[in-house]
Length: 297
Length: 290
Image (cartoon, rainbow over all chains, first blue to last red; front, side):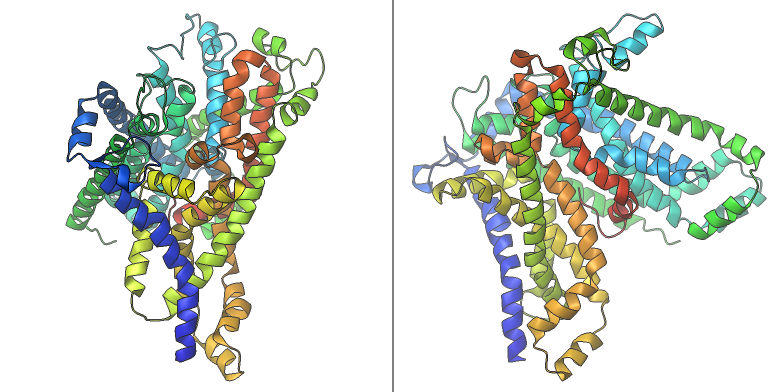
């Protein structure tokens, strides 16, 4: 037994140190930082001065932060509806017994494995391009005027569109795994009773996918809360009001950016805490909802 | 699923059934044609001159294949450095993570000890902590300890992937029979040696899957690299590509840009071509990585 004790300590120690240095200490310090007024992120604790809820008051009064929260909400709602509907549609199609299912599934999931920076560059430099872009060419083919996709008016929607395209495959896989868990005899019985495909979808698939849908909504919410890369790619040099999201706001506040006169690590920490709280609330709500109706099948 | 499929392929084509599935075929095919069209266009553009790209004639290759786009991207635009860095980060981090996670997962799944449950739930909580909650203190800490250069990003990528990897491997160690260790103990093999020689090879399939995900994760990582890659020689591909895009205004070398995009895109794409089944079953099977 003594030998085992040594083994356990030696084997678990690296894991434990990782948890402490990489997670516990930083989270604790970030929470603490959000209550202090700190200019530079590297400032030692002796340079901090207590600020109470001042940082929170500051960010919630900042127009840029409010815009970023509004953008995040739009991404969550509009993007969520489209992404999850498309994902469900593809999942239903792919499980309906069509040929080449594995190929289709792999192709739709593909954007999730390639570098998102490369993917975003493809969209920005090609699909949305004004002169030779794919979308404007297609519009001209049917006789319509080209649109300035990356102009201020359309940029947000262009970004969201590209993001949805990449995200669908992931949620589709989760839906597929949910649909494949539904026993086939339910559908056979329904077919014998004369229910058509649409009725089967509405009366069997949808209700039995409730749990999986909640999982997907949770993932989507966390995904949008930490939304950063696409916003950065669509406004790479100067942050713009059309594409700003909270994490970009945090990045600019802490590490500097256009329109940021003084860096404020305390306010950045407050943004981080707000986002973490949003995620905790989402998990809490979804857990509560899930417990209420656990279907057994 | 596989059984059903075999039966279906044995049958002659049931045209009525295929017809009822037609709308489904059309929707999925349109989506995939769109994906393929723009990937092929990017590939064609990477062999074209900037003028051909702007006039919209990338598929004609009137002036031949411009392989020099790749040369200029690789050398002048520094892609070789970014590429080597990403490869180094991904490979070293994948090995490092396993060295930390596998022993941890093993003792967590095998032995009852003080703090076992706390560490397990700590790992799960750690997986859902957003990066914005940890970057600032880590930035301060690494500056204070004067940690910089490639070793800094390698360490970060190792630590960042430990919670997911450990949790993933934990379930696999739990399925192994205890008789392996008992037999080894009777033969006089010390427990640590038993782990490295007998138990670790037994979870090889799980190690492979989790390493694929870690590799993809590190290769595609952007946020940490943007904050911590302070100099050009430690920049990985994601941030490097962003820098190339930003400098486009001055260079105007569109062929080179698309060549760089293809170079960054290719490694994970090739990996996916060969391992798509394993990756897809890994996404929904053994735990999900966000």
